Length: 356
Image (cartoon, rainbow, N blue to C red; front, side, top):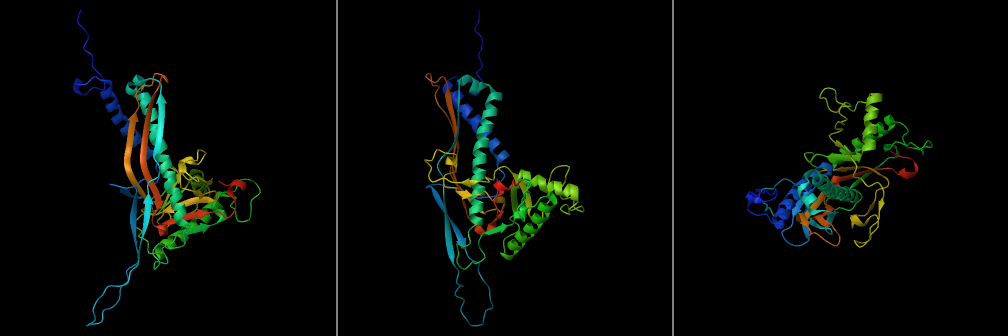
């Protein structure tokens, strides 16, 4: 009786049927699936200034002041105008890791449906954490009122405070807190007008599309206000925004993006060795308990990358009857242009106000 001709799923052209080859091919599959999943949860994707490091663990980004202009007097020598420069150093954080132990190597290598579920989860976990770090850094930049370049007095962050930016739902509102969706929408429109004026006054480039990030609960509160009160948030002539699709229009040239990635709480992380709730935030510390919105222009935050995503598959552990798979990224984030950052916040404590 003849033997079957066996085809191995992970063998390249049938030339290598070893478990090492299967593991190598699986790493490629895992990496592609994880990288595909990451953008789905990264609301700030494309909004940061990215630098891939060839060596070292940090990068010095230049900061330059405005260069003025004037009239030339015939016969005088041009010697160059006085300018002031500075720099902002952004370092990579500790290694960002997502990991899972699976009980059977064959299940991981060949059960495609099962594998894709977990690889998507690992990719989303890495993407969510990166996004939260970026938004925290934008808030930190918004709160700075000392410019990097001393001659650029307008190159500082902006914090717009208004209790009415959130919907108070606890039944005993504090003065200034909004109790209706229409009130929230009216206050946001005024706040975004102030933000747009700041962008213009600071001579910030509008081609770097300003984007406001707000929690989804607040996003749909604004949509509700438009739907029930007919507030003129939607441009009927150019079909900007739609209740049907749940899409907010631009307001004063500012794009509005709903997100789950704003940590509306105080994040306290003294060191990377901390194993508590905030251990994954490393040095991205900030009190966001009063933060309701974060506005960024592209380049407000910098991302430095020392290593692309790496997938490692451990040899099967007999003692544990399992195999460990890890996905890690070596990146760091930091505010870069504080004048590109704005925070929208309440003065009171939203936690005690039932604030949406």
